[in-house]
Length: 410
Image (cartoon, rainbow, N blue to C red; front, side, top):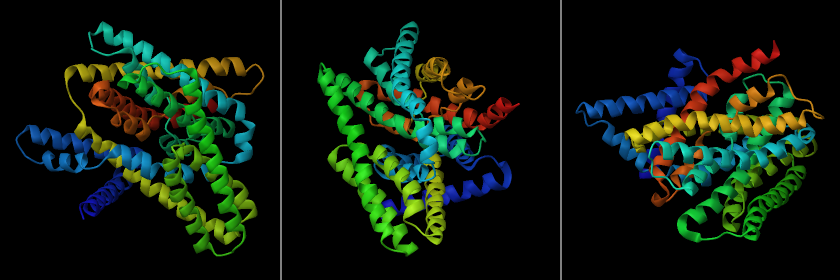
């Protein structure tokens, strides 16, 4: 019953804030919802400080929601499948080199740049942080968030090839990011030396296993879809594919996000062309677009409400302010280096480095990974830093990326 009450409160809040945003602010819904929920949370905290015991109840609501589990084991599979469903496989194949480089080498370079830079910055300000803790922060903040990117980028009007690069990177780079995060977490938690063989095995299990499961599950769903012509049943099959496939991936300890991206690409391309009638395609798109909008609304409201669990110590706030420019600089270097090398034989749009740097949004996945850290890894400090980067990324970068994209066309 408590879970039902929590869901009811969140959906009611999302609907009310969505109405206010649409009626008065008229900014992209995901950004508007996060801005309004963050503003409401801060207002409640201020009222609490003035002696009104209001924020206590909101704090209880947020504390009762396991954000990490809700996102990583619940909403993420549905959101990734919905996003991948509308990515053109031919466009993605044409950008496969760039997507692969940004999603692998880019994440690794950014992880060590962020970790190294913040370690020295923390030492300068006399913050008690181990180098491995700084690397953990680098690993969880370096992958761009596909949910934030896809929700905002599709309205920015970027050149098709550049949009495919950014969207493709964001869909796949969480795989390498999670592997790096898990390896560093094992070291930080006292797991000792981690051999290259162990890292490769973990990479194979997570990423290659996710790709294999996505192909197999997607192909089974494809065969089922091609054997019938009933859009209600076909929509139900795709929903079962996501929920069942993601649960199986978790059971097998392989990457559920990558499995859902691969399945979504398969169903959204081959399934759409070869296994569905026009009526089914229309209804399938409507269903998944609605799922995408509803879950995005809930997710960004939750991100706004997570401010209740932050620590507002002066040291933590300084760390958060430091983290924003350091993460942006690392993104600029990790994207700019490969672009400068590849542009000698691969075409890139004008201002590609600037747009990819500013369009590399961070979101709920980074917050969820930070929340999964044990306390001995400076969880509270890293969470505050992560939240600062995510809020800046979505509110500032998300609101201005369209203007930057349009300036690149002039």
